[in-house]
Length: 136
Image (cartoon, rainbow, N blue to C red):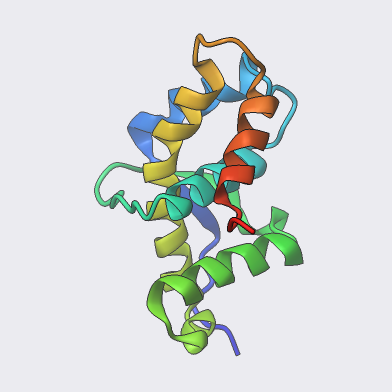
């Protein structure tokens, strides 16, 4: 049974303009705050980078908007990070882990979205994902 599920996923207060910029003027225009947040978290996780957001936090994604797939991704990240399957019983800690990965991943996401090199963000992201797959 899960405990301590927070009401929101938080971001660093000073990162709010970066999230708004990504949502408003990029290939991710029209996406939800939840989608961009989780994308940042996955990028941070893939790179093994967590950065604490202690201090100036801002509520960003209300948990009522998280569906089962979103929570599965978050739980998988927390299990892989801790090596403890029962971590999912402590959703407060799961959220903390995912928030820290998103905090680290935001910088990479912003770089990918606004990079001046040729090619669309979606093409760059597709290449990025392919590079994550194990070689045959």
